[in-house]
Length: 186
Image (cartoon, rainbow, N blue to C red; front, side, top):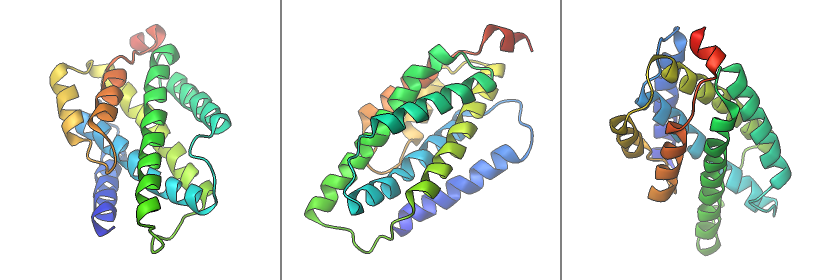
């Protein structure tokens, strides 16, 4: 648990520095940090759902997340249709992490882990999603992601319970995101 918290707080510190000033471009490292932060929160989501006997999959909630992220993408100058596969990959990886935690807890319950209120946790996710869309847009303003950037991001995605296939799908879909044509000029 201390390891997860250490990663979370160090990532938070890195992110706060990244967003403290107006950066011309977000680095692949910053994108990886935001993705790791989002994935780390999934343990709290899984814990709440396990404690309250809720299913991992929540299709109405997923629709809300999708709509919010597409709106964030639009506001950030991104082409929403190019963002949608990334959002689905993000939600699928998030659910997979939750299922993996749930499976672990079936064999060894983690009753010592305090469970956060799901409303607060979801607010954290919404903030990270907004930061992620802004960071992607910042990056694409200066340069598209290259193969080396993608490899770096995959290597830096270290959140527990995130599989290699999850990482590859996230980064592949992220690398296909485009800026809106009118946003490219402005």
